[in-house]
Length: 77
Image 1 (cartoon, rainbow, N blue to C red):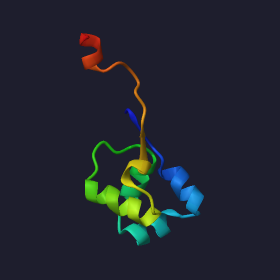
Image 2: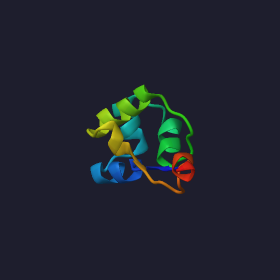
Image 3: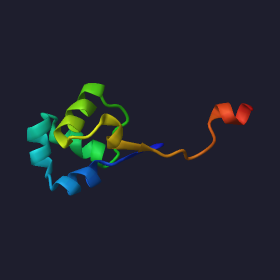
């Protein structure tokens, strides 16, 4: 997956447990765990917004894009 989760680092920096983040964000603990462990393929934007708000960051801070191979557009060029 070309996206890596920054959730572990953000939680560690803020000294938040799963339970505390769940309480603040109103996101289910299993969803938080799947986002944190990068075991999630799709997630609602509203869920990302809730997590970001609870962590006091922007949504784009939750993940980092890591290109693993040239895109199909680049191969055609």
